[in-house]
Image (cartoon, rainbow, N blue to C red; front, side):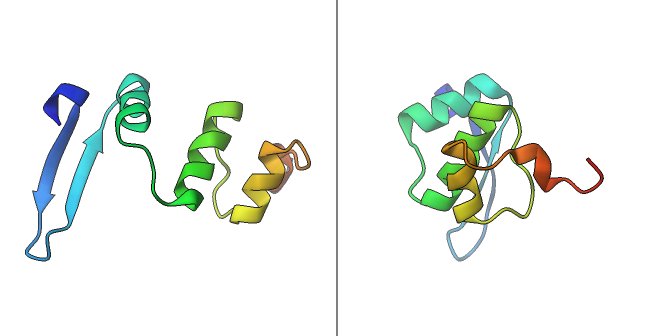
Length: 80
């Protein structure tokens, strides 16, 4: 894991791990080597990859709409 730039920072008794990814290249290595099992988390990554950000508090459906160019992610911010 260290070769990927991924460091385990904490291990709890219930065998949960916390990983620290620093930098875009390490994130890309993670996605390429390990990927996401959770489609909701993966959709956040895809929105970020496409737009350079992923709006907070979006639903999976909203992220699908963003990826299909049916929803502008900028409209999800109040005051814009």
